[in-house]
Amino acid sequence: MQAVILAAGLGRRIRSISSSVPKCLIEVNGKKILQHQLDILRSQGIQDIVIVVGYLKEKIKVLLGDTVGYVENAIYKESNSSYSLWLARDRLVEDFIYLNGDLIFDGAILKKLLDHPAENAMAIDSSRIKFEDDMFKVRLNKDRVIGLNKRLDARKAIASAPGPVKFSQRGRDILFQELDEIIGQGDKSQWCYSIFSRVAQRIELKGIDIAGLSWMEIDTDEDLERASKMRFIVDQMR
Image 1 (cartoon, rainbow, N blue to C red):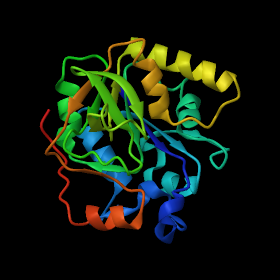
Image 2 (cartoon, rainbow, N blue to C red):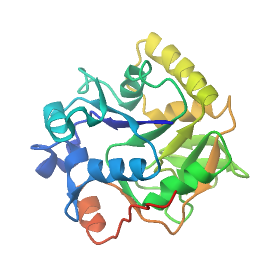
Image 3 (tube, rainbow, N blue to C red):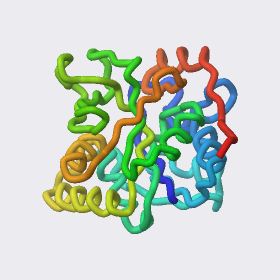
């Protein structure tokens, strides 16, 4: 299994820190978000890791050297996450884990996702859903994802969708078919989770509830302050 981490963006809403470092290198309780993610992936035996870089890319490369693979999004200022993922298509040749570079989380979340028998699945949290925030919300039919949207109707949303996301080989192929179509039309502005919503119409994408486990997407100074008061554990159990 492979993993891809998207870490190309500017992090405009937390510029007090990300003006000097990419958001994935922000420290939470003394540890960089990206290093925390890599430790979790490797604790579960995932060694083939690709990072999509853009903004302040050299700082990431200096830190990690040749321990990971890199794909560069040269137009990170004008594009969004779906374009970054599409750029990694030739490097992701098998089943893989998708991660955003600003997500800090318990290792138990990834373990739960990997241990679940579903070939295609995403971590969702039924205990943390705020309709006014910027997180993608999930609509389910039983445990199958049938819709993802930041502004999903409160009567339809079941949970927030922080990820990670697991794709099988077939899921990977369908995902990149969708991305090929979108990018081929000249649209580089879509969020990945909007594309995942389309993919969920073609494959069975399960929602794996991680309620009670710790995670935080670091978008703002307030998020960073909240994360600093939380405990995130790298689960070494396989």
